[in-house]
Length: 514
Picture 1 (cartoon, rainbow, N blue to C red):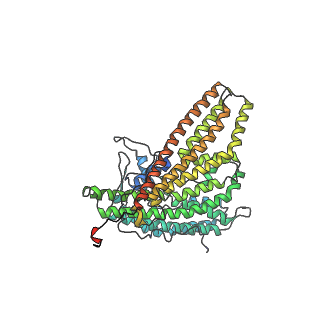
Picture 2 (cartoon, rainbow, N blue to C red):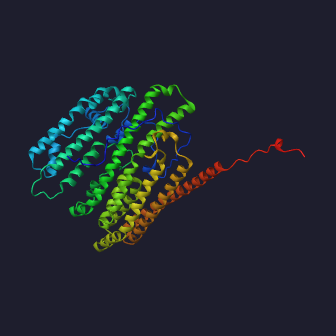
Picture 3 (cartoon, rainbow, N blue to C red):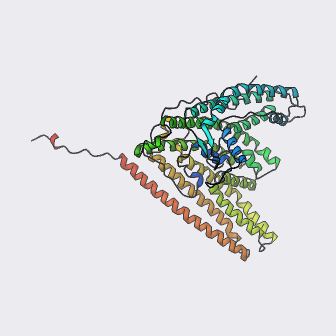
């Protein structure tokens, strides 16, 4: 039986790791505070598990004397376990998939379910049993504040090794299940292509199985959800289906790569913690301690960097919808993407939307004037779309340059080397390019707001306030851009000084006497 190929997990969880990562050599990336949160570095030395749970759970801040409920504790436990123990699809889920795929052969469905459940037997008795046996020794949840505590001992390394085996086997069981569904008999009236529809469902399940919580906002957006959140027209969805299929194929490959690297980095961190022992911070200080802390920070940054390839795929997907959707619909897609993936960029969209809404709701304006405002927005939609896509791409490029020194192409043994001066210069230049695009896009927003003045005293007041705020944002970002440029110039001077040849010292003894 031919297997459905959507990327292979056969080589995952077998990464050769060095016993110890190399120490950081004293270089660090320049951090910025230009109101672009998605571009700020994840700092500190919080464990991976705690950071993951910040995104999986509700993230409600608690005081020290607060106590979580039993339901919240159960939710935390479930969210944590989903990162380390794969879950099988139940019979109801499989029958629902069969119905969506138009399969009417109940005998084939039943045999598929039975084969799938049997394939999970070795998992439950093998790696999953290992995970469950060691779980309590590795993780605990504080009943007062819900904090996750990880115990770095050899028990954790055994659990992590079993986790890799379990997820690899679970993915293989899924592949066999979807192969059976693809070959099952359909009804005579079914209009969908069995192979294409089954592969889509297979990839969707894999995104669920191998999904990790994001540290950067909006990394794991679903393309279909992004579109349906702004447009429910089935005809529009049909028009973009080829683009969504291309996105799914690219994401599937990136997802496997991300999982592989994340799992390897976590094992690397656990092995380093076990090697050092639980009290190592009390035994070292000064340069040795700083170097070790830098190693852990580099591992944290490397985990963040695994999200960047998928973000680029998402940005390319959004840009590809431009020729398939009406300009105003695409404008809403771009803004929704900003809201999810680039919150700082979405601030501008929010301000403009609020102004337009206030204008259209104002008593100063009549119905013909409302139509004129809507026409003005439609007339500038294509330019706003282009600038919005450019800004989103540049924001992701800025992230990529900031984490290049720990990116997917960097070997594990080099992670702690840190960024060099060229990396710092490139990161700052990308920050400058992003600010230039933000300023350019804001200028178009301002040009769109200007004609609204004169429609009435209430609207005039709102327009003046809007433009005053725009000017303040411009002054802030222009100042940041200029300071970034000064830093780039200084870094270039430092780089040039390092390359200057030191003149040789004159030695009189080498001069022959006359």
